[in-house]
Amino acid sequence: MRNAEFKARLLEPDDIRRAITRIAHEIIERNKGAQNLAIVGVHTRGIPLAARIAQKIVELEGVKVPSGKLDITLYRDDLSEVGLQPIVRQTEVPFDISSRRIVMVDDVFYTGRTARAGLDALIDLGRPSSIQLAVLIDRGHRELPIRADYVGKNIPTSRQELVKVKLLETDGEDAVELYELRGEVLG
Amino acid sequence: MKHLLDFQAWSKGSLENILETAKVMADVLERPVKKVPALQGYTICTAFFENSTRTRLSFELAARRMSADVITFNSATSSTAKGESLQDTIATLEQMKIDCFIVRHEASGAAHSVNKFSKAKIINAGDGRRAHPTQALLDAYTLLQRFGSLEGLEVAIVGDVRHSRVARSNAELLPKLGAKVRLCAPATLLPKELEGDGVSTTTSLEEAVSGADAVMALRLQLERMNTGYIPSLEEYRSLYQINAKTIQLAKETAIVMHPGPMNRDLEIEGELADSSKSVILEQVKNGVPVRMAVLYHLLVGKG
Image 1: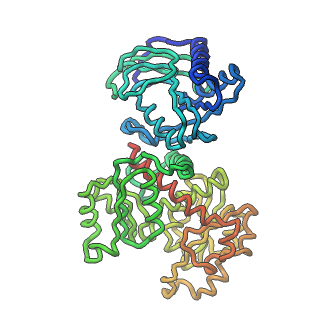
Image 2 (image 1 turned 45 degrees about the vertical axis):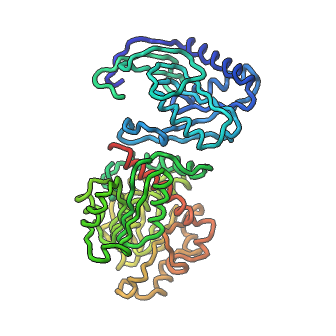
Image 3 (image 1 turned 180 degrees about the vertical axis):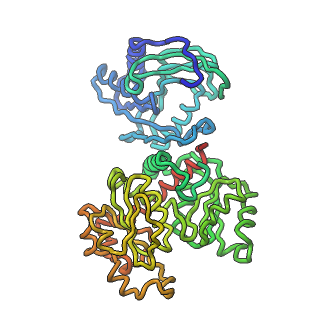
């Protein structure tokens, strides 16, 4: 990783599995079942997390929960941090979100700007009856008045640190790691 | 990238990235809300020194679909008609905080020269006979949509190649993406210097079309007909028209393309243009998402 030094491993595969199971339980409890529910993951690592949560809910409730993929690049307000060539990926939400309860899933909850962009992106697709936010890690430092409804683990960090979520589907292993950034820190 | 003047400075990877982005933009256009805030706060000026309603509308819609503000400069109704130069016109417009100029001009190289006196990003929307890069990109996108990949595709481009910026831009772009281009025209309208890597020329329509995956007819510019390039329209029609008979030489899956506006029953048979082989209306439709992708990459990317 560029300009970042490994500090600690925060979550092991079993911790991630338990966190996802707990989130799935909480979603069912809060929504009194899984009827009319849909899970939408934010690119990149929110997508496998969303699929895992959806799968867990199927196991627990026996109800199929549709899941989708959301790319929020076109809704970002921090484009100054986009690289040389922006990468825009496909949004695939193959069901009508109107009147559904949507759970938006992301890996790391930080400034809140991704979640803000995700809300705008979702609302352009229809009018859900509610949108809830589930994150694997909440590392603090919010810049917007947004909070998560479901949190896998709260990890207090400094802005000088970087939280890296690794998932089997995207990185070949399940882990959450903490790094120390060196040099100039953006934001 | 800073500008899209032609494809010289563009790598295969960046071009493929634009075409990927265009797919996402096309999805946006299918939604109930056909608009994203991606270019909110940006101001785009279409500076058209030569008439072209379709290209201008396509660009303006693309900009608006991404929430940019658009102003239009049309030389026919403005000071260039009073003798103001291209340089003065751009310098004047630049004072209005323009982030991107989309330039159409009858002189080859006009868009390049705007670059010399403007700090804004520049998109060439057609300069003389030199280049019309977004047309070539939407052609590539249309091919991609039909065939999944451009690798190994044989594309015949038939007509007034000499005066065609569409032919030049396609001859530059398609080989970069793995396709082969066969340019075909009467000898008077076929500049041999366009031959090169992945680009061949021929005066024989049969040779050009045989086994092709796509056949693109170019608009015969009727205003050039009295200049001795072609003996008669009748002869051109009999030797170079793309019609039901000539298209049989191409692959069975071949598609028919035309950059528009077309002279029905001259360079292309009207009935073929309306048939299921024709993707001419798809080309027009694809213009908007492709131009959205170009604008987005130029204005937001840092490369």
